[in-house]
Length: 183
Length: 169
Image 1 (cartoon, each protein chain N blue to C red):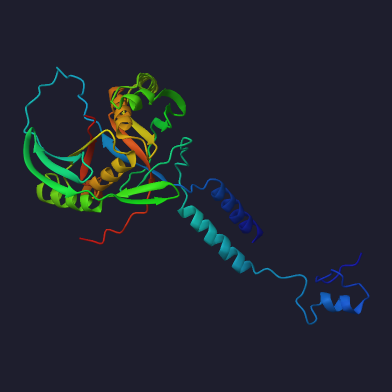
Image 2 (image 1 turned 180 degrees about the vertical axis):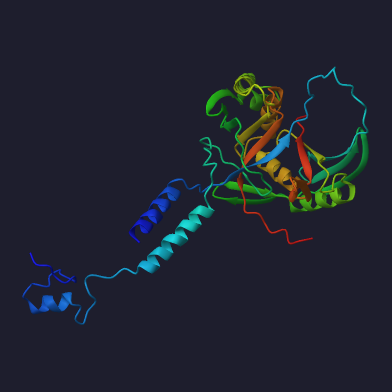
């Protein structure tokens, strides 16, 4: 086979005039379009920069089913801590059931949730076994639906405090921060 | 050229797969619980600091009370206007008037305002049992409105001026 000059080959050897006219782009747009590498690389670079700017190393936290979190503006970054979720009437600690809020809602009175207390206490003891030389941070994150009543929030809050978690954080959806405007 | 395009494509794929579109964050609140007894250290009685108590018990007003120990230093009422925004069943409740009043109160009565001061003024939130959680978050968000400089590790950054304690009584 002889070496041939590079160039367009598709349908060039069809001995028909109208085909030859089409493939050479005679009067119409050519069938094979060129791709501008500069524009494509610009687009790819811009996409990479955008995605890198919105990248979060901490990953996405799972919100329990049925929980709609409220939004807040003056927030802090999430931390690694046990998550207590109130989904409907069920209480979950890191996704595992740990009691329910039925009794609190029926009585409308604040009370300790024993299953939650035991679960959190177990978590605390496990942490102390893993890190025997460190001070226990005592932080727990509450993932609570926006319509839950304060009496349930107070009960869970107090139970967490009694179980050795006095530093409680409420998980919220972050709102874009407004400009301060200067003082 | 081809390896560079390959690298960009792989990077885009990785970033798209690991992208986080909903940004979760947290609002901090402490519980005031007594610590363990420490008989080995001698406790010296200290003058109690002024604490801002925010009462959220009536639907028409907030009451801001500065207390020093058991003594009431000052009291001021702020009209309660629930600025509720609902979007796709997600509610936002804002109390801009409360935030502004707390900021002015802190500027006049707050004790820890210097950037070198490691302590923060304390705010205690009291609420009734029926208040929805979204309103609680709105009030705590308003309490965190005033900011102060805080020097740590040789650099100064803006921090919330008040530390919130959620009263469960």
